[in-house]
Length: 256
Ligand SMILES: NC(=O)c1ccc[n+]([C@@H]2O[C@H](COP(=O)([O-])OP(=O)(O)OC[C@H]3O[C@@H](n4cnc5c(N)ncnc54)[C@H](O)[C@@H]3O)[C@@H](O)[C@H]2O)c1
Image: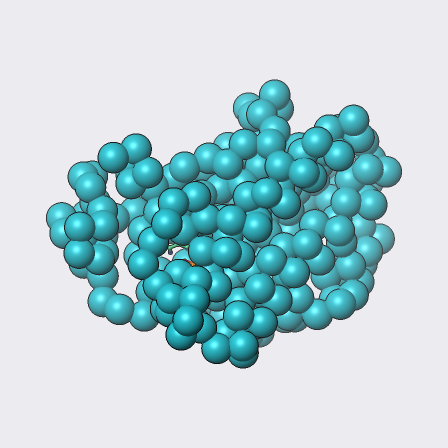
């Protein structure tokens, strides 16, 4: 078995997932960067290969193009990673979509089904792919990515907010069921972070100004690295006594 720790990160071709991939590589981990579009995860791998800090730490990256919600896809990948590397230390179940902004009455069946399929079923399939290996090893850390929209009511998040509330509940149940097996499960709950998931224009990082009218208190919008830092902490040994939490990474949005 290799000494190097291994993390699977879904949705690693952009935004929070890409920033997390770079963070783990800079900590010396082997990253499996997973996304739907091969060219985007290859870009992430190239960014890691070109990063002096990641190289100095011995971090590395391999890629996989798949749909996290497709039955069996994540399980086959997790099996192949364990066969090749002999270990699987962490999962960051980050892939998600926010295609539409609708209240319940305006939410189409297609939007509802696809949002729950990717944001909730995709998380479940990612977790059940890694769990057998973590249980066998008696150790592992899972971080799912929820949202402030899963904690507080927000305008026009009928399907999205529902999926993210589901992720929080799902993660708590994982924590309870798998703590006896040495596996921790926590949810990250980002607020407004400047990534491609937002279809409306956001202010530039660091600039004051709400993502939506009245939405974001000081210190303003977050950057993908802010979420990656929390994700890293929840996978690292520094959080070894933390499981079953959903950690706000929202610049105070839910505190106001
Ligand atoms: N940016 C924010 O303000 C914010 C706030 C709260 C929660 N989040 C959550 O953070 C996560 C990452 O989003 P982001 O902001 O980095 O946006 P993003 O759009 O840059 O990243 C999402 C990634 O997931 C990938 N993806 C989508 N469906 C997939 C599937 N079926 N299989 C594999 N990959 C898939 C996309 O290709 C993309 O690379 C999402 O779960 C999102 O809901 C983001």
